[in-house]
Image 1: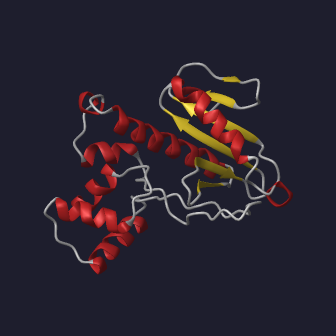
Image 2: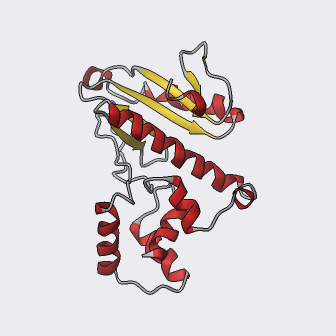
Length: 206
C-alpha cells in the first residue's frame, strides 16, 4: 500500500495509466498482481485518499476524440510530501516536479470551492495532446476553464491555450464559458485585455 502511494505521488497530477503505476512499483522491488493492485486502489478510493479527476463529458465541434483518462491525485498534497519524505529543500531541487505539486495543490483548492457550490471538476484532454488542466461546471450547465502555472512567465502561453478551447467546444450545446482563468503562483490578480483572468492562488477564495 505504501508503494502504491509513493508511485501515485511520483506521478501526481499526470495521466499515468494503472500499468505505469504498477510498473513503477515493480521497479521499486514490489511485486504486485493486477488484481491486488485493483483491490488496493479501490480501497484507497473508498477511504478518499485517492481522488482522481475524471474527463469532461462534452460535445466537440470537430471530430477530435477525447481521452477518457483520469488525472491522478491524492486528496491532499501533504500526503504526497509525506509518502516521498519530501522537504521544502528537496522540492526546490526539481522545479519540474514542483510544478506538478503546485498543480495538485491548486486542483485540491478548486475541488473544495466547486464542491461547496454543488459543482464538479473535470480534466480536458484530446488524443492529439491538447489539454486544459481543469474544467469547473455547475449543475445548471455553466462552466469555466482553468490553466494552472507555477510562474508568471507561463501566463501568456496558458491564456492562448484557454482561448483555443472556445473554438473546440460546441457552444450551442455546452454554452459559452463563464470565465477563462490562469491560476498561478504569483502575487497579482487581474484581467487581461483578451478577457482571460489571471488569478494568484493566494486570492483564489476571494
